[in-house]
Length: 229
Length: 229
DNA sequence: GAGTGGTCTAGACCACTCA
DNA sequence: GAGTGGTCTAGACCACTCG
Image (tube, rainbow over all chains, first blue to last red; front, side, top):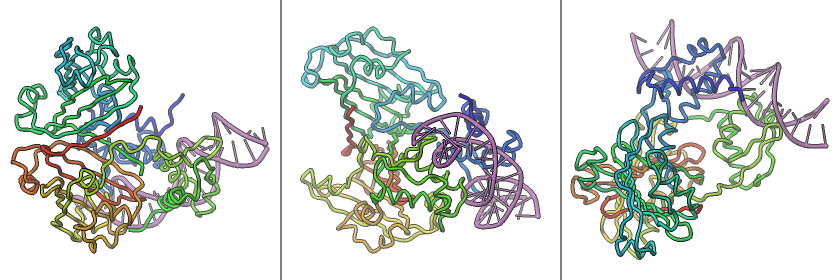
């Protein structure tokens, strides 16, 4: 499973950016320079750079040069993804702080939705490179995830555990822009009065498995989605 | 703004697939055959085919051939729907106010994205039962929608007209929570300092067809999506 | 005018599949 | 062995930017 030259060049530059060796906005070596460094032809360098540009790692300006693009911080819409994986994909470090993990009495409304009187409740703060990116406030149906309270959510995400415990059949989400209440904006290190992107996600596995409220800092988070036609 | 050979080849094949000229699973001409048809070198054909594969329009199997890919399995993640239809579905009345409709000089950045120097620009405020629900700020590629400026967007939505004028092949959207600038919160009748849900949507029809910024009052708008699986 | 990225050419070698 | 896609070369011309 050896790597082709254009992949080597791509990885080398991507790694350099991830490692902070080149900083946002900085000029990268020109294609001709890279040809010499890597002893390859320009088409090979060009392909590597074109793909990096397509992946939004660099920005290219004809007649000027190639620059390190600002880090994206965006998340797939609708895909039920794992935030830890998403952060890792961006080459950043993910940490989680477990704020709450307990069994609680369901509110009447939650009891109706879940069809049970007691629920598991977790609150986990996810950080990217040490900065809060998501506050995950989650209710879980105990019958579908009996060992939920025994998990170490600094090592695995609730999402991961739930997917393994009970395969998700169906999901639904609402996306809202709100002004975060002070308790939440404090956790997200958000200036009071700043916007907050709230994703409310329900997942079903036979019956309602989980209801998650995911709060994100509006200033450094966006959802992203693609469609074909 | 003429088209480069690899784009011509790409579009030609994409159009053929869209038109049903080639059906799902069918073998496409080999790269060598396309070289002869289009009188170009193989690298040029290869780039066109590689990009079509990346866009999931075709599937390539080394040593075998290139095939028309099945239409995307998962339907739209998050439908960004016709706002007029959405409002009508709720049994409410939709009105639109056209604030701007003109041809403008593209900013350097927009010119790069669209590949043309002049663009059409529209700003339409959509109201549900008389209350602002969406401010639609849109840039349109004139070559794909020549009659854009002649439309009456109080009767039809830009979205509707564009879909008819140039079938959308691909879309992409970003969802952000922001504090709206005063000019926008005034139009949305939003108290200053309230959150605003911003959807930035790009659509492609061969090339970039339209870039829309859709601003919604955070207090009375949410996005909704479902998944199976 | 020197440097940049965007694109193209006319070949080439390779690993692979299929008959 | 003929055909396929994956990749590479060593040049080239162009439009563009900038000093």
